[in-house]
Length: 494
Image (cartoon, rainbow, N blue to C red; front, side):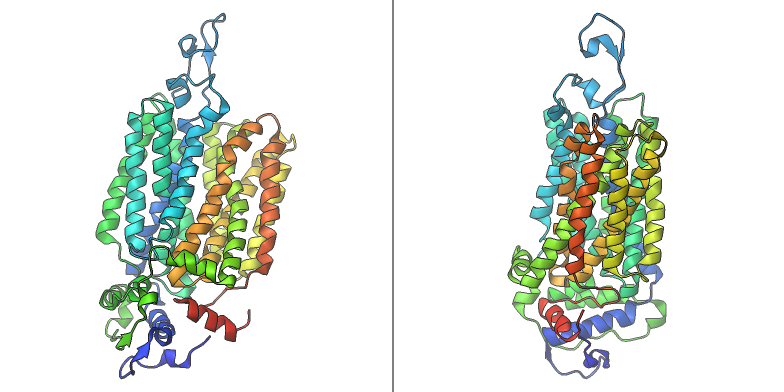
């Protein structure tokens, strides 16, 4: 709903309630930081750099947990590590070559199970007491410290537990980073934040083959050292440089901090303008939500619950393809280093495509188009076309990348500030939930690709069709409270 009073001057306003003020605050926000300045660029870049380290820990198991290439030195020996020369992975280090598929896949599954639990536990903290910045810092520090301690693992069970802890910490990085960065820029720059996040993740994935190749003659533990220590230093950078979201500060009655943050973010041409706020009374239930009030709100409002279920179901299908494709490249019979490089490089054009279409295409249509393309190419990978299977896999993965970030932007536009981080975290949990089944399907797909690529394609196609029931959000202003969201949509039909 457009509020004509939202464009009035700041001075001399009468006392008003938060419900009247929120659209006014959004007008202030858009007016003063709608232009993308250097401060916003630095803030966004530092925040979204977290996705670089996120990618490393998400896909590190491709190399550390890989099935080694065995060269037997004793033709009469049974299967044991003393009779073979092998590459350095956890399989060779702990003699897991004859262990069950469950044991060998346990570390990767534990990581994604940690992501699931961490997402549900941490999802509401950023919307309640902790805030966006502090949750990002906590998540990154937990993930990186667990990764560093992993080098001391004496067996696969301790290793799996530490991977679980790393996944638990990693769970909220993507959501808190994207929400924090988008809440510091104007509406026309939201899509660009998604692009930066995607490129950062792609560069993190691209760095893994190089790190693994350099350390190919050393223990798998060295890969964790190379990835965890830089991530710990990054946490210090976040603590020192990153500002909290002004929207979140305002909703929590920290208006002076919100104003100071806006003044820091404001572009040079507005430096001389006054960023004063009227004296207002803020409803305490709105401004200081309890730990799980945001989840309660999402489940109490039928429209919010319906939207949440649809985007989560869509996320499940996208996540199965997005996370499974890089993990399953070994099934295609190509060089494992080059395959990951190709997958990482394919993310770069996917985000270039996204940045081009985000301001021109509608959210629903583009999301359906890329999920459909991804699903069809994934199913086609079951054919014995070795020459073009890698190409089909790359197209499927690239399309899933575009769909992934489009879903993230779409989700944050569908929900107001008071529940935005929670909703986005729930969607990310659905994405990760699709990845939990990946190790089992990939293992089964080694003998029959229908059980891997075929299922990946069918799941993303069937889960994405429900997007047609969502409202379109392109070019809409972000709402901050539930009441504002409902009032706007009551007066402006979708």
